[in-house]
Image 1 (cartoon, one colour):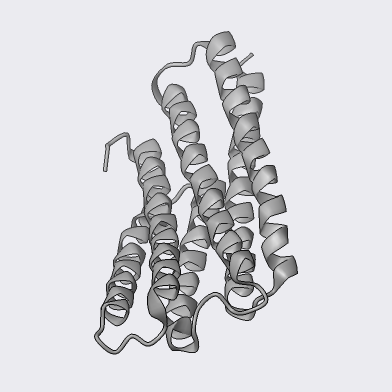
Image 2: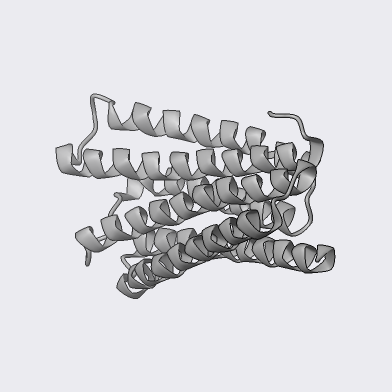
Amino acid sequence: MRDEFRAELQAVSQLLVEMAEGVREALRQATRSLLTADRRAAESVIEQDAQIDELYRQVEERVCDLLARQAPVASDLRAMITALHVAADLERMGDLADHVAKTALRRHPSPAVPAELRPVFVDMAAIADRMAEKIAKVLANPDADLAAELDSDDDAMDELHKGLFEVLLGADWPYGVETAIDATLLGRFYERFADHAVNSGEHVVYLITGQPV
């Protein structure tokens, strides 16, 4: 029974890794659609979101089944609760990538952000990609130090987000209200993606150390 439990717990971990890799690729494609008006990339993100949602459903189903059949305690229970929390954060990260893609589609065939804002979104996307990569790594091989690095990545994202607002609120903003609203929402999507990555990392640290972050 113990070997079976461990095997099923490993299967849950693998689902989480698949989710993390999926949301990373989704945001990559969403950013591509955002910056290059690539309609197919945006549509692929929307398709991927359904797959991520399905993985989330599988994690919930498997964890609930294990809780009911195995009545785990101590570290095993902590692992299962962590899986539910991380899955919820990853599912939300997938939703945020979906929001970016849908913004790009709404503006198609024009790029959704003006040339002046492209550098900041390129940088925000790079940070988000790095954070998603780290989440996938710590889920595959739990590493508290690597998970803790997400805090400094998030600080960098917050600085970019702040800089974006300074541009949007500047007196010489030339692109009108609608573009400013889209840019504001897009900045928020990337910023929240990073926040959920941090949450996931904190859950992994808790799993490893038993101490809340």
